[in-house]
Image (cartoon, rainbow, N blue to C red; front, side, top):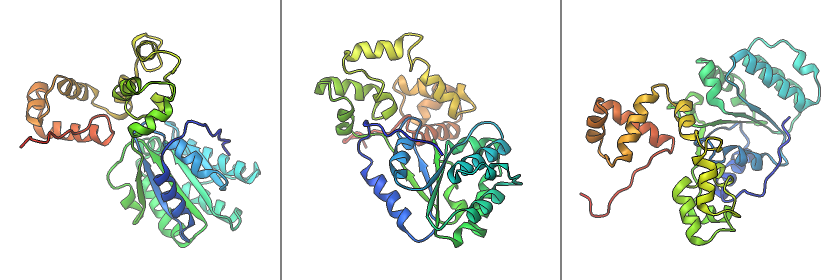
Length: 295
């Protein structure tokens, strides 16, 4: 079992925690997809939710389905404090859950799969496998809760379970950003918010003993900076055709806001550009602003 260290830098998320707590109290096996871009605080939210609850927490790897299955069995063995569980040869994901249900007591256990998109990437059938697991076994029980943390929302994830919940974790608002940066003036907080938005992972990196400009220099503008290659990392993490997404982002940065103008700049089909923009919006990398007097 993972031992979590609860940090002090946790603000807002009251509604999200209440939502998860309500689902946990319901007398059924609820399935929740926790969706939010990288660094927005999904794991920290789960850490808070799991306090004083029995849980199995697993970070999915980009290895193979079988390697992840072994990892899950080891996490479950730690939950039971019995290495014998990990020594069992499980043939598939359903097999390991069936055995887990036989071993566990009456307490309600939360099973969390963090970075679930990694498992989706290495096993195209994993979603249908979990759907079958839920339909044939878990839907009949009230002593388990499944949480899948994903960085982007793939259509149909919750539909596969016939009634799963989707909880979107967005960026923090300005008031909560200020709580992260209590050592800064109002103006400096505006600078930071304009630079990195309300993404907790980035906010935690700002040293309020330094000026905003010094932080930007050490984080973004020197090669050894922690966020120097962050833009490239995000693109290669989420997209296959990175070149086209870079073109779309370049067009947006130059002030082209209409799909037709972006398509003309990039030399791409309008329908394709529309899908690219929708994908960027889904990940929270770009957003829409509407002018009050615009027709």
